[in-house]
Length: 86
Image (spheres, rainbow, N blue to C red):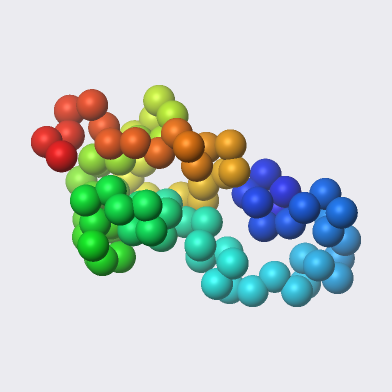
């Protein structure tokens, strides 16, 4: 939970884990991150299409699943694929 930025080190107790909301978890999905950061996607659907068409990479790896959870250290590594026309 700490790697994904959902909880801090002090919050790694059961009460905090049970208090997590669905919105907080959904905000860590690659689909949401792409839409919020504005990678040529004005809507969530456009972000999902970019991902499925393999225009997005995280670090060195291409991502093709919209449910991919982005870790805190990987948020800065989200980029367009080198062969992407965008």
